[in-house]
Length: 318
Image (cartoon, rainbow, N blue to C red):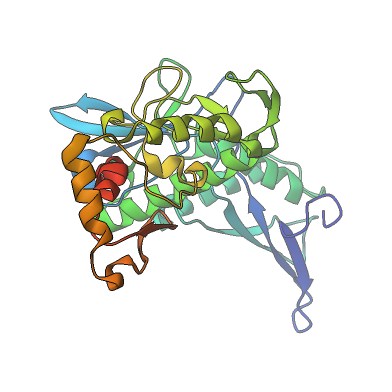
């Protein structure tokens, strides 16, 4: 098993005093064939922490309450601790205990009971540790947790019913959403795709994917669109997706926000020109650059010029 499993997922040792083998394994729950995902449901009123999932959550009214449905396809591992009795495998089976960040301890105890029942169906005398790990990974979602199945083949994990307190619910939801995000982003970065704007083949790490609508564009095309948007100044309004016109949160595209060293100029007529000329006679101390923070971008400001406000008001507003 130490050779078969990836490094960091399996470990064992022998106790010098008892001569018993103990160890642990990180079981990664898998979705069965035909199951697209697990819908994690939580009432909107129960959530206070802002999350950033890979896929935009859906809002659905259930029993006179608005609920959020998060799409989760990758789950945090379940830590399986095991002890092999002296009579193993001839006359005894492994002893298991489970640890998990998103499943309560009483549910884990029920899973261990079902795992022991599975072991009782196996013939004694044969090593069964690998079969137990495989059974836990493939059967945790569809069978062991007892999750209801939706019409589209997905399973429903209702945190309101499974987790008793608000703090524990938010923690479990955060762990699920963040792990799913990191795993999907890792796979997205290594995937090859075509930019729909320039029609060039790109890797995911060279593209920006918008959470709201799921559309993507390569960094060069996204940066060009942002530059054109910012050149329009205050009249540009909110930044929208180039495919579906959906409003884009600027925090999603902050790495592509162009570095601007001078505020954009806008035509304001004679009055604006007079104000500009008056600004040239201001105290030299007002010309000392200061900096404001926006999404880790340092944007220089010069005094109290009105043109700065006009140039960046759209960014501050969004």
